[in-house]
Length: 219
Image (cartoon, rainbow, N blue to C red; front, top):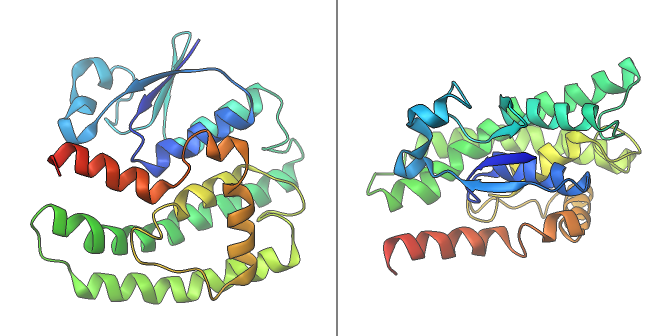
């Protein structure tokens, strides 16, 4: 039995849910809200020493970090989402790292300051927003070029790199970040968002987040 710990607001948690859905794996969803400190309990830290979400427990095997979880799920289920060939696997890893380390970090800067800081009564750091957008102006064209030459981000086959990028881009609208200038990236994203594995999680990620925030704040 697979237990997935996390909260629907987290795009890192979404990443694992997308993978589980694509692999047709049933799982128990254990709501773990970091905003309520539920990820800092001794019980949760026995599952994820980092105290971060997501985490999984598969019959006593416990693992945290979304990319590591997805690699394990793909390998243990012999899925082509993470190719067996060393060179193809390295390409998937490269694009996964590029997106997580660079694109994700830049979007995170903008997301926090445009969306979450005001909700927390904090002043937005305009310089951080500027830097984040400046980085995205460099990173998005790289993704767009890759997707204009390939069906998917790591080549002609859907892979964990696509799942990673899809989840990283989920907060774009919430962050007032547009991909409209990048036609290949926009088309790729819309295509995956229409698929059952995504729709089983969200019809509209932005609306889901806003509804959840309003419910918690009583609005």
